Length: 306
Image (tube, rainbow, N blue to C red):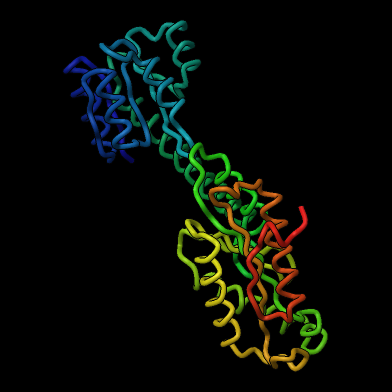
C-alpha cells in the first residue's frame, strides 16, 4: 500500500517514515499541507498519515479536501495530534479522518492502524469493482451484449446537454420478417441470428459510435459526426454485410435474413429533441419496410407528418 506522510517536523517525519517502511509499505513524504495535497492528487495513496498543525493546509483541511475529491476510491486518513485532546480527535473525525495517533509516535500503534487501513481500502476497492460491474450490467443487453435503452437514454441526454451541439445521426434497424423466422426455425435459432447481426452491427462502426438493442429484433445506431448522407452510406454498407451473413430464411423473398433501416439526423437546422429524432428514425424505418424491406431510408421533414 502507498502511504502519504504529511508533517512539517523533520524528526516526526523520519520516525513516521521508518515505521511505515518497516511495515512493508511504500512511502511518499510532504513537508506541509499544500505539498501533501499536490502529492495526494498525483499518487492517490491508500492511506494518509497527517499532522494536525502544518503550514498551508492543516490536517483538518487536508482531510476535507481528500474526502471531497474521492469518487469510487477511498483513502484511509490517520490524524496525528500532539496531545490527543478530545476536541482535536472529534474535529478530525468530523473532517473525515478514520483514526488518530498521538505524538510522540509509537511505531507499533501506527502499524496496527495501517493494517486496518489496508483492510478497509481493500474492501472499498472490491465494492467499487462490484458497483462498476453492476452499472455495466444494468446498461447491457444480456443476449447481444450491446448497450440497452437505458444507456441510449443517458447517451442521448449527454449529447443534447452540451453547450455546443454536435452533429450526429440515429439509425433505427429492424430485422426483416423476423417473426416468421422464429416460427420457422424456433426461438433458439432466432436468438443466435440476433447475436450474429448484433456482432455485425458493432464491428461495422467506429468505437466512438454507439450500438444499442432497442427491443426485440430492433437495434439503434448512434453515429457521431455524421450527416444524413454519411449515415446512409454507413447503413448501406451494414445492410450489405448482414445480407452477406447468408443466414437462411425460407420465409423471406431474399432467402436470407436481411435488415431495413431508417436514418434521422441531428444537424444544423434540424436540432430536434430526442423523442422527435427517434420518431423520425422510426418513420423512416417504416418507409423502408413499406418500400419492400432490405433497404435504407433517410428521414425527410417534408415526407413525414409532424
